[in-house]
Length: 382
Image (tube, rainbow, N blue to C red; front, side, top):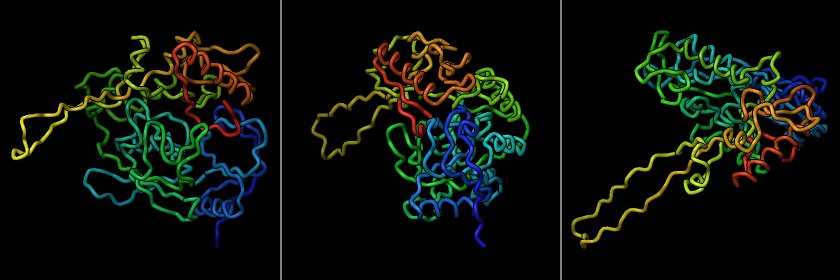
């Protein structure tokens, strides 16, 4: 017997997204198992309906008008161990609707290293590879093995390797960027991670960015539990852990991406603007067969890596401080973090979009750089 997703009374997306904005869809289904999710999406695609899948709703800004299609709530949960190919590692298959932070808590409790620095990130496991989530120098690309993908074009359930997802900085082939659709359309049913079994004792902390964020020296050793609690405390101070009593958490996290620019453009920005080269230039080595050497060596072409620059710094130094809002608007920058647009209570998607456009215009006017939104925008124009 085929499992059927439960049809429920459509709820406004403002109740299902962390930005707390969005109208109700024409139709809403709740898929509690992988089979229900597969059956629901297969039928929707066969009928040619517009569709939207919603997990934790933490990376969505949905318009105020009715969504003229079907919203599928992804609620399949579960974690299972699957065979690993190497000693000392553990593979986990996680259902797409499983809460991400609950997953991190499970891995830390089991002594498995690899995603502990991503504690406190809202959302579900299935959404994590779509934008290659990360925090403090740790990204899911480092541990993701594969996903089960229900492909819209074929209608087939496929096992897709992490390499095929072309994971980049907060992106993948599955992510729809503002103004550009996803390069591959489908729905993730489960993900598989490979984590290192390190137990519960103190261990060295890998990654300079993570050590800096945690205030650790290069030779410091701490437990996974300590890392998780410290990261959650740090994120909470920035309003990046959901809290019903804190409007600063009614956001989609960082609304604008840190911009990636050429090295020459980065030099036009003030020296105080934080920046991070995306790669390290390595001298090339030329091998010239002795029989073909004519005494001349063509000098290697010098290339400079692209540079990631701080969007938060650009926003604040364009005159938009933490807590900034437009007159009579219920949308504002977080009082803790200049990258987060927040709903201070009852803000519409239109108000949030108006603030986002104003920020883009100010930064572009001041620095000649157009910031790009990180959340997926549905029925909203910037």
